[in-house]
Amino acid sequence: MTQPLVGLFIPCYIDQLYPDVAMATLELLELAGCRVEYPFEQTCCGQPMANTGCLDQAKPLAQRFIEIFKKYDYIVCPSGSCTSMVVNHYHELINDEHAYHEIQKKTFELTQFLVDVIKFDAFPESFPHVVGLHQSCHGLRELRLGRSSEQQIPEFSKAGELLSKIKGLTLAKLTRPDECCGFGGTFAVSEEAVSCMMGNDRIHDHEQAGAEVLAAGDMSCLMHMQGLILRQHKPMKIMHIAQILRGRPVTVNE
Image (cartoon, rainbow, N blue to C red; front, top):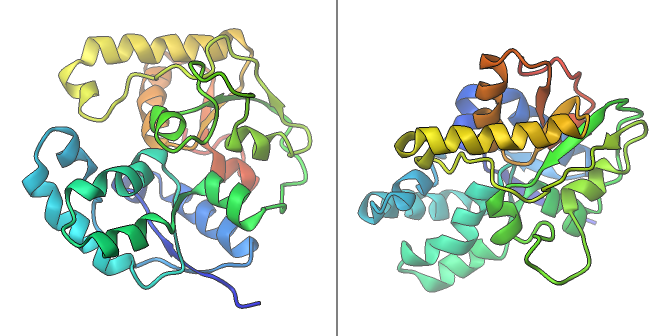
């Protein structure tokens, strides 16, 4: 069987601030038997502009994304929010409906791709830590990577399914497993006080559950909460799910 060719879609903040998340994602995809290319000409997907209503500024970025990634069998991104931007919101920005639908159906968030497409099973030997899983709003409510509390359906979580298969890893039992961290992109700038209060609430929920590591599939959420954790000198570490699945040490991103 021919190995699928995957275009690695890396969000701006991961590229600039958390490059090891990108490397861990690449390693996971290669472990899963994919041929992976990182198109160096990729830029921002346009989400910050679109979220603030600047659709005219977002349109050329969306069109550029389509042109760069159209040749790949799959497009995989370690971020629910950026994946959702492409899958759920590019229809407002792209005139070529056929080209958009072709991109839409082959673009996946990392855990979604590992669980639903590749059936990933190359787990680390051990990760002996209590992990609190933060499930981002975009991942839950736009990509449906897990059950949100307002849904009357059986509980599931693609990220949780992967983490539960790692020996020694204990998932913390959170009181509010689907609550927003308060980041919200430009919301954290325009509503700083509210954003920080929401972030501290999320951190406290993980603390009371005994989490040593706060994990998520969205580095933007983790970036927000990491800032609060470091400023308050809390011992909790933050890690992207890709880093845990690759067996990275908990000292990463300190």
